[in-house]
Length: 467
Ligand code: NAD
Picture (spheres, rainbow, N blue to C red):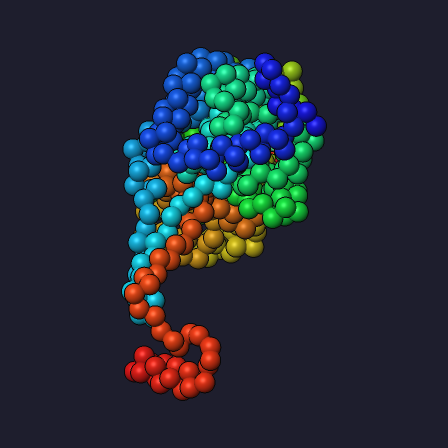
């Protein structure tokens, strides 16, 4: 399949990967200063495409400019600046101690790039989720091929133009297309794959990568719950909860999928939710300039089809505008909105009596990408932290764990494997190669044949060591 085009040549994905591998193996990004320069060039490219990026995500999914600027642009500046400041420290060889048997000698770990890294990204935060893993990959000294999502084609086109005009293909190149293009790229055997998307496609990617034993990082999704305990002040928490549901019209992998509210505060929660929703987006949400749209008709139909039963607030839809209202649904575990990840602005509300009930509800399901807890009770905080399993846990906050360069971002179980952001991205895209450097000055004949008498000597040493 001929996919990479330039002014003068057309080469296959396999040839492109080989070219990238050669570039890295010949020391293309061995210098830390060169990696910093490449990251700065990426930052400058984003800067000159700011308007185009904001316009593209507005066209793709009606994203308000402020949301676009914060999540696609500022976010990337923060990630890049943090990497530039810290690569020298991350890339240092790490000395390790040696057992007495190997003395005199020295040992260390040297972080080395894999070679050509393939990044496959989704449509919902097209710039952030494409470029943020790439910052880690480049910081670690890899070349990169990006395959952005073909859904919401405006952002895809901006990414292709921005990157392919800025970087030579042996360093960083964007290839666009559908799933056949993705498959061809995987079968062309890159050295590492980082996939962000749904668990269903994640399984396909891993299966195909396994054919060439390509290591993978999988950043997946699922239903992220939010527990609201009775001790919290509803006025203090509601903006955070509403924002965690409505940012990007609910199309956020770590957005709140459903709430588990303690029964005695359910009515207070519902009335505050409606009050705050009206304050933020008005009584007729479709008129609000601050609320986005669903990416396409397919997802609109899927999400709209979940609206049923006892609707506590919202419920309006408009297919011509791909608009779905912020909709609070009185639900139980059998409700249609509780059967799969919603990825839209519906909020099923379920109740519990004691915290153990909420914990067991979560434990019975797939491990979520994020878990949110609203409570000031230290005992409840500790119980939830220790007895639940999720990619991340945020207490009295929503979404912001992802914007913290000092915390790893990733899932566990069905929500993914591996992580990135800051130094965790550097480590993900590095092979920590152990190096043993043994002095020739002393040697022990214990190791070498003939083995006559060696066993007794070794047993004696083992006995002495175990004292
Ligand atoms: P998706 O899995 O449908 O697509 C992701 C990527 O895979 C795209 O580039 C697409 O072109 C490619 N793809 C799709 N089907 C394929 C196939 N059969 N074979 C090979 N490649 C294929 O996901 P999406 O709809 O773009 O995004 C929504 C999902 O992603 C949600 O589940 C969400 O939770 C998850 N997500 C996770 C994160 C995270 O950081 N963990 C971030 C955003 C989205």
